[in-house]
Length: 102
Image 1 (tube, rainbow, N blue to C red):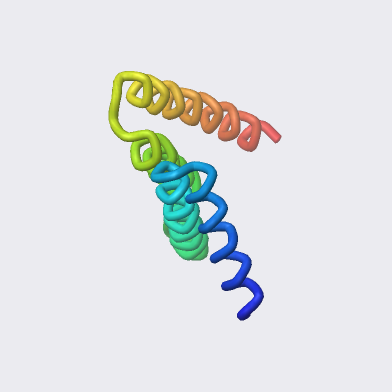
Image 2: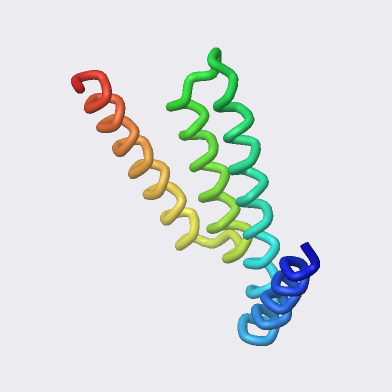
């Protein structure tokens, strides 16, 4: 475990040296994304939860973290977020269509 902490610390230092403030935010966003994935897995273990809705919510939150937390709010990130959500909805629609017909 000490090796993982050391490697994470080295990654943090390198991301700050290379990316500056944005690198530090990217490092923190990496752990936020891990937390979202962990909660998604926990919610997926409940058979009453709809996996498509849980997936849509998790993808939305991860996209929000990666776009708005790292790059801050501006017109480009808003457009990218909207197009990402539209793409996710279209892909989930085709996934549901294929799985129902398979």
